[in-house]
Each structure stands twice: as C-alpha cells, then as structure tokens.
Image (tube, rainbow, N blue to C red):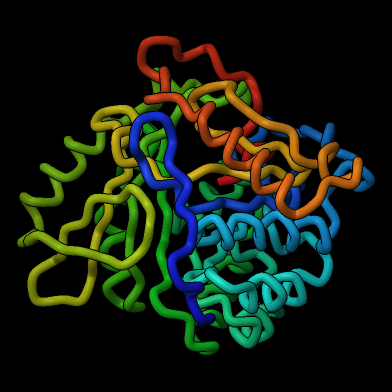
Length: 333
C-alpha cells in the first residue's frame, strides 16, 4: 500500500510485546443496538465537539506509523455513520508505514459505500453478523438483516477479500445457527470467525449465563466437518482451522477460554482521543488534550511511547468480570 520507512522505531511494552496494530474508533455512535455492545435505547453518545477531527486522527496515526505501527483497523461504534469516511480512509492509507488498512462494520450502510471504500484502499473488511434469521436479527440488533446482506454482496462485487464474518456465539440465543453460518460462508466465499462474549459494561446482556466456550463449538463442528489447521493473514487474535475440501477458514477468538494476552500487539484509540491499552483494564492515556494544547510531532510520539508502557500484562475478565463498565462502542471493536 505504502513504502515502509527504513529502520523504523518500534513500540514495545514492558512485557516485550511489539505494538504494531492500532484499532481506531471514528465514532461511538451506531445504528444498531447489539445486546453485547449497547443497551436498547441508549442515546448518551459523545458530542461531536469531543471527537477527533480528521486532521487530528491523521496526525496521531502518522505518529504511530513513524513508531513502527503497520496495521490499522477503522472501527466504531459503526464507522460508516461518520460522514466522509472514505476520505479519511484514503488519507490514512497514504501514510508512510501503514501497510494494512481494514474496516469493521455492521454493513447496514455498506451497500452505498463499498466501492468508495475500496477505492480509498481499504483492503479487508470484517462484518458483524450474529444471525441469519430475520426476526432473530431484529431482536438481537434492532436492525434489518436485508441491509446487512445487501452490504455484504456489494462488498463482494467491489472486490474486497477476504470478507470476514464475525459471529458472537450466545447461549440459548444463536447457538443453533452455527452450522447454517458455516454453510452461508462456504456459499459466498467468506471467512467465518466465532467470538466469545466478554463482560463489557451494563448492556442488558448476561455475559455470564449467555457465555459459550468456543472449545465446545469447535468440537461440535469437528463432528460435522473435516477440520484441518488453517492460517489467515492479519494481526488479530483468531486461531484458524479450514474446512477440508473448501476454501472456508474458521477462526476462534477466545478472550475467555484461551486468552491471547501474551501475544497482544494492539491498542485502541477512541473517537475522543483516549488511547486504551487493553479491553479488560482501565489503563488509558488522553491524547486529544495534548494535541489541542499544541504539542509538536516529536512530543506526540513521546506521549505515545509513554502510554504504551501502561499496557498491562493481561485482562481480568475472568477474575474480575465486573471491573470494566464502559461500553464496547466507546472503546472501539
């Protein structure tokens, strides 16, 4: 995508992990109300004046790129509710050092923007899709399944590859759709990723009683499909298998049953300029005030280096599940 600078400085935390992946939230707003992300009727979003401007976002990501960041994922909330997102994507894709620009979306607005996003050099997309049943999807998210499916087909037509489907598996809610989702992804040449739910905020979801250990899901799939080891490009935590005789790769993201903290290579930048070092801890660093106080580029990089040293060794979702009270939409997916 861009030329990598020679001998870039690298960001390392206190546990020797190379931090080369930033997940950038461009909005905390969303047009759906997924139970594990936002409670129904929630409206207390950040005011736009608190959001980072495109210029501020570009400046922070440029600093990360100069410090060795190679991967950038645009998230939200729902990132496509932010006006002129393809413009921002194009600016970020052009930054030296950024080699992999991807997008997480619920796809409700993707049909109209897919080609513009592809033209802006976003290479990969992840789409949240927890049900293929119209009524169930409405119950889980408050939205229309048809809009998501239209967005997925538009992304295929625009040439995105891979397209990854993210399904949060919930006990007594959508477990019965796992096989259907596998067949759907085989049919459309999508990659499928199952995700364990995490205790994040007070959303109305009972994360303890609705939690499903993905090791049991993998075991059940192995009874129906011939699963062989698989790999996928990307900087995320999924562990993959492949369905033999097909191109389908299935990833398992297991923050609870098999945490991946020892290899965590990412931080999250919220729309209000707060840098979060871990989803399961409160460690954060405010960058917006530093920018607006007129810091230099070198000072900004020094603040980022300082922030990375706050990254904890691991989350506490298991030992202290009630610790984190912020919503996923604020932190970024």
